[in-house]
Image 1 (cartoon, rainbow over the protein chains, first blue to last red):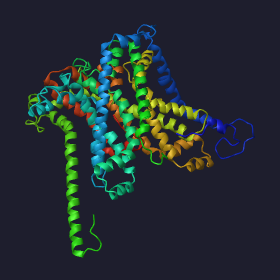
Image 2 (image 1 turned 90 degrees about the vertical axis):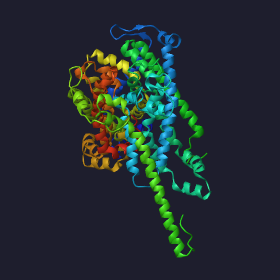
Image 3 (image 1 turned 45 degrees about the horizontal axis):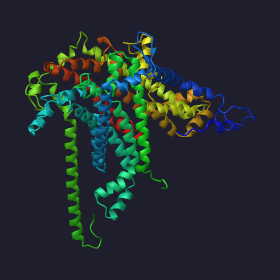
Image 4 (image 1 turned 60 degrees about the vertical axis):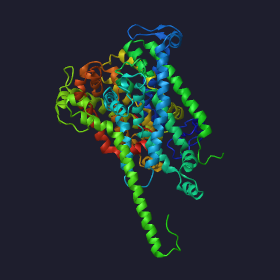
Length: 324
Length: 299
């Protein structure tokens, strides 16, 4: 991450290949003739950054102020798309609500499951590698359409889950057709994929010096106290990392909602995720200006949430070696 | 844990034996807990596998994982494909897209990472910062303008929009992964190459690229699995059934709500998951290590 500031090296006499060959002072050749190779190697990336990232970002910002249906040229409407989103579009507001609920429920549950299993697995024992890999597997499978289809049927009326719940006397019927439970089924699919953050937690747990646990044991701390006073603070940077990553990820969830609801976000918009509604507006109704406005609001929302997470993290994240 | 040193030998042995058996009990409890959790976790996958071998009337009516009548008809029905396109077409489309994405990502990200990690040039710092910033950018903001651009070039309903970005190193995750890896290689390697007269190109081709192999393999595997699972961009860009990849072909089943089509649907789901499972079994060590060192690997 740390690169020498160009300005500082610019005036230095040595340059070029880094062998310290003296150059005539005052001659401005900070990087030498080899600098061109940097741009040569970077050229595919630069092309991609300009043509597929920066250019499209600017274009989509422009489109968000227009009416655009892909076939006729965009027509400028000013802030109209944004105003309509917030004043006239109930489905938009409900998609925001559904997505917020999803993020707020699925992220903590997923991280709790990840941390719980990581704690369970974090002991020097044969079989740990096997369990770690096995618990991680759903993270790779869960993003697929295939597993989302399985979910749809498992939580359908008469499927295993509704039979299980009715066996316990709670007749929930099919979750996927019930506005109350459909989102919960998708949340469970997200939680099911706790393997990736679990692996990261496990790597973090291994970094905690065992001397701290020895000290806690000497002080007579019980399991819970040790967890609260040693594990959580020492692990807090990793918790923050996983929290940010999974939150950003949850905002962008799409496949599961699409498959479970058959692409419509039903029943009665209870699984109309933000991205799903964006897709419907942009690629089903071809209201691309409107969808671009939605996309930019998503960028802003994710930026704000990330900033807030980092800001609050000062209060609860502990960096070992920090003088505080 | 252990007995006090002053205790007579006999009690010390007895205590350690008791300790050992307690440790063994704890180990057994641990394994049972882990296996129990694992069984719950993997139940949906086993359920899918079992359903794919069940006849239609048994799928919904029976909870048992073992089919009463074991049939493979679901698979032959799934193989027949849909919309007049055979399943092999879907399969080979998925393989082509994923294969090209792997090649593109490995090449372009390695080249870009080498520049960021090992070469010095003006603007390297700001460009690198920009690349890191794109890590956070939701793909949805690029979806519409990219679609409009590819539409301009008549590339809709081809593989180009899915594959071309990978050849331009747009997956910042993998660039970052390889930058980290190449930076960890000793500085002396580059110096030695330079003294032997290697330019940056040869130093890259003969030294840094071969040494970065673990990072390249990790990139290749994750690119394959993510592209194989990818749904949204394939949904947007591929319209005609003969261009469909496996996720899109599976999607056709969504609209058929009749329970009689469940059998073939499950059979096809199993078929699409097989490559991922094989990759997982072959590379699980690298995959798990890739996640724990780079923090990626979510879906």
